Picture 1: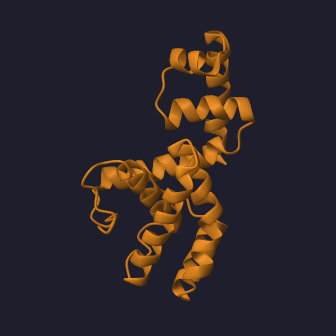
Picture 2: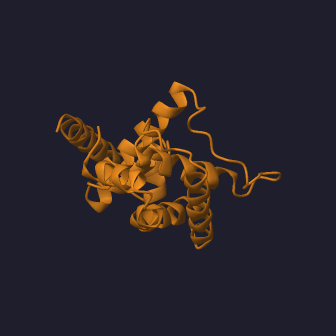
Picture 3: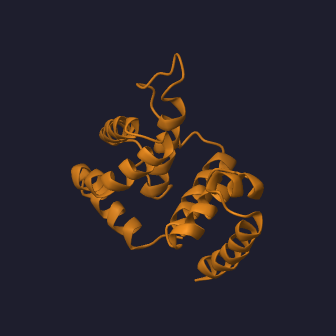
Length: 170
């Protein structure tokens, strides 16, 4: 499902306006990296993500339109965040979404879709949906982490499932 943002990204990429393209994504990249890394180190990770995207785009990668640029952004964010603390991690390795299996690529599309949906929810329901769908926590773990009653979490999950169905159909 492509939208106006995808069309603008494709235009900027076609016109080789890489600075504008990455500039339009910087705040999103930074917010996601800070949230995933749970602290200020996320700003360093965001910088590494932007540098990686810049190098790969300059090298001619990710320009075939096979995936929307947002999928590439979220894939690189996930890859850099995952490898940030791993010994022997080579930051200089190029990210290879093009060589990813269809299942891996589909998983990124699903994650990006869920992130976009969660962003539409009110704060409380959004936090529960993020923990459930993106962090993979069980309802009991969510209730404990958020200091909520399990029934309240289950009600929010039920509301969110209906909203997700409506959102996907729209």
